[in-house]
Image (cartoon, rainbow, N blue to C red; front, side, top):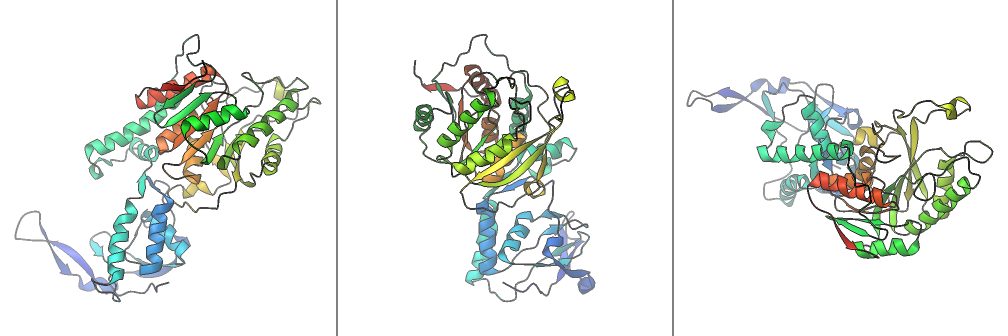
Length: 448
């Protein structure tokens, strides 16, 4: 690790009399009087409004350069220590073992340059610093929904983009919102037939049974995949096309059989899983069943070991009826997201730092469930995808329902391979994707 002491010179711009609008640069003799201090790296705050997504490769390039070449550039802080530019640099520096930051205060009228007194321009370290500084940026991308939030809040970011570039990014963000919120008119009779496999651009959706070995392997064969990085899903609370009635004595038993069956099939394909579930099941005796606890045990039994939990805090989208007022049950304004798998941990530290490691995720529920009884917001699979995968990875959903995981995968540059038992919900997924992308989905395999 390299020491963080340095000597610095500051140059201040001044108006030049040679031509209007040009500047000359003179040595600012008062530079050595500028305030500076050495602070702990963890005193800096990551920017919650950072609209950049930094992939693991992005952070890896920065970290390896720091370890090999030392520090070669500055970061930009607001006066409260929030990192305005250089969030990934500070994250990677922490991983590389740096624990101090030399902070130089300025009002923006001075250029702050880092002068490395230990290297010449022809040194390998100089070349490495120059290349890595530019190469690292190629592995980062824009978080379109965060960028749209900044624009909607009144921030004028247009001057920093080519016009068509910003327009395209905001259009993509708008498509995600519209695909989630727009009512979808479907034909009275489903277009999809049982056994159909649809191709939606790079994605695949099959109308089939996620607990059936032949259906699962047929879908994977058509999609041309053997393994996937992540599975994201919210399994049904009943069996079959309709949600089961809790009053049936065999309902809980059937749910357990269904859960074990799909976990056995899909756990051998996906390295990781993020499973959204609530404690909504009730046993024959009327007592609430800790279904999330049972899920954890089922996944452990299938060699899909439990890793961690996030709790989704939401706004209840239902009234408080007799089901709650006649029992100890509370209205479910939270649900669990269990993380399971065997893949080694990858530190994907980026602009999502402010929610990624929190135990609770506050996300607004879908306003209307008129076309599917259990839709979750696109933000839920989107967070799981960003946290656990890289662009281009395959994401599975054995119960894709209205297509939310596929919509999230499309917006985040991942490939989704999904299953859904209901032909009408497959139609809904296809329609949402076509609305979002303006492309046309096609049936590429069928049993009929």
